[in-house]
Amino acid sequence: MKPAKPKRKELTPAPQVAARAVIQILMATGKRYTVDGLREKLRELFRNEGNYEIRAVASMTSVELIAVLLDANQGLEKFGIQIGITNGVVFLGTAQVEPASLRAFIAGQRAPTGTGELSLAAMEVLGCIALKQPLSQAEIDRYFDADKRGVVHRLREQGLVEEFTGDGGRLMFATTDAFLKRFGLKHNGELGDLLP
Image (tube, rainbow, N blue to C red):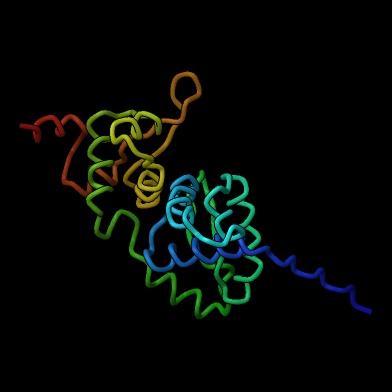
């Protein structure tokens, strides 16, 4: 006799609404967001909700939101989708892709590392890192007076920025050889020549 599958826990209204809203934001925009950025967006969207159970979405903590998103993955599995959370950045990805022919097709559709268009925000952060490197995440955020972890994460994925442990064990960011190649530079010293 097979062991009974554990029943999936039913979410109360606020977690259901929060999970649905985050999934729709991620799918509709195609972007990655920090957990804190999503919390702020949910706070803005639901703080004036008339139903007090749903209004609770506006006061979720980061830990509560992460738990809700991880729970939501159980329902997304059957569609081959999963919510990923890495270094405080939330994104939609695929679960294990089967069959192998589908996996090969998807791999062929991805842009090679370091290619593709960069958004204005990505160019601004990349320029900041290039000119001021090495920089910590806190320093980058301070320059822009905003949380730029998601942008830095995408730049790392594209191979334009790398992380390393700096003095005092702080995580630091600097540009890579792929960055130099992409922008036709021989070394970082040439960046100064581009400034007015």
